Image (cartoon, rainbow over all chains, first blue to last red; front, side, top):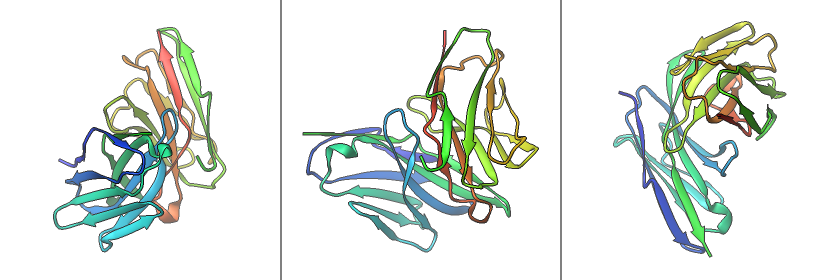
Length: 115
Length: 113
């Protein structure tokens, strides 16, 4: 069964601290993995996207890693800011046909950065 | 939120009434999607469309209907047959030459009482 599991469900950290969010998946055939940031009441916004051959990708203070062998990904946030408070969603895309990709969504990690 | 707009942002309806959620995109994307988001759950696919005048059921299509008469528009109707319609609804789109890209709209919060 194709699934995406994220941990932890929620996380509270102090401003300026680092944190790491986890994503494990069983999706096949794997196409790519994307991390989204979703502010409360808003649509998700893409942070990074990685294909099978990529191990690490950074976007400012956000660094995503991918281990395609163990089917695990992590999102590391450095020097957190209050504006990082949001839900972070891991999405894995399965390549089904030449003209359609199926997307599998994790339930997200809700991050709360406190001053 | 890119070039995808959803309206209204908040919608309130009485039980038993049909309601239509709007989704418009000016990105010239071929594919469009509707998702439902509930607390503690991942996004679930309701319907998707890869081309004008064609659409396919997703994982939870019961109680919903869509149309795709124009490339830029993909409205979703929540019918009275949908048992638990209260949710946050997200529209997304993808370009044909990059189907793993997905851009989301700002969402519509529907509350049915």
